[in-house]
Amino acid sequence: MDILLAKHAGYCYGVNRAIKMTLDASEQRGGPIYTLGPLIHNPQVINKLTERGIFPVEDIHEVEGGGIIIVRCHGIDPKVILEAKNRGLRVIDATCPYVRKVQDKASLLVREGYFLVILGERGHPEINGIVACAAGEHIVLESADEVNNLPRRRKVGLVVQTTQSQSNLVALVSELIKRVGELRVYNTICNATMLRQRSALELARKTDLMLVVGGRNSANTTRLAEICKGVNAHTFHLETAEEIEERFFQEVGTLGITAGASTPDWIIEEIVQKIKVISSGAPELKHGRAL
Ligand code: SF4
Image 1: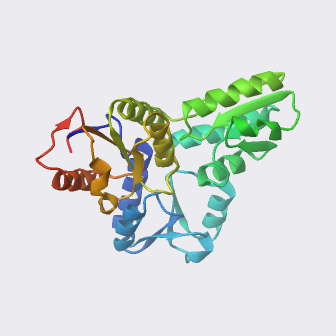
Image 2: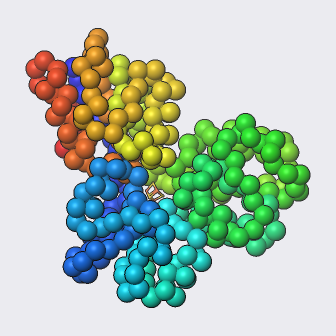
Image 3: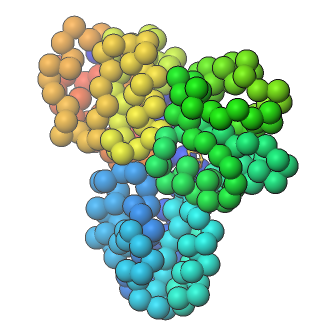
């Protein structure tokens, strides 16, 4: 069995940056520090961070004055940052610059009188942060199927959650064009997402089995799994090597592996090792990055 690893898979720039900022702060502090929500959507990484004294909290009120609180890459309502500072907390803002760009474009559209449409997952922390930053009339749509929920407006501006798929965006834009007088679109899907989706799709098309690795609570990993499933019904979304079963590999000549932007290399590596043990003979790793 050949194993092919997607050219772009695993940690992205924003996640690497947030983890580095958090570890640096933890080292300097030499005591517990807190992240507002899990730092990334990967339970295994969160467990490792907790072992190092980095704890997720749901609310700034759970942290005593003088403590350090990290804003994760999804961003947050600026009022929460202000309140944390007023409570005497040190805030380290690890909002990904690409998420910041969506927040800025959304605010710009509101300031310029556009009714704001955000294409993304309702309730996702990134979307909540964008809505809070824009502070204006808006609607969140999860897909083009929901376009009938859009109130009648002449000027509509659209931004997109960084982890959305290009096909969702294209479908929504083609519906909006039919309904509004003026449409301004900012394609704010981030480059890391686009590269991961493109290489996952490429791999899913030419393999017998696709394994998509990453947290089940990770929006970008779930999207990768959906994309792969669209072209390869034999696709599984896994969090860890423990979930691998021998039956996956029956009649599989070529196996593809991809991973979300919040999946560390060590989890991908553990999965490849487990497959090597299960399959007869040592499989060759082709085209992939060195593990
Ligand atoms: S997926 Fe894109 S927007 Fe999200 S953290 Fe990574 S680089 Fe930033």
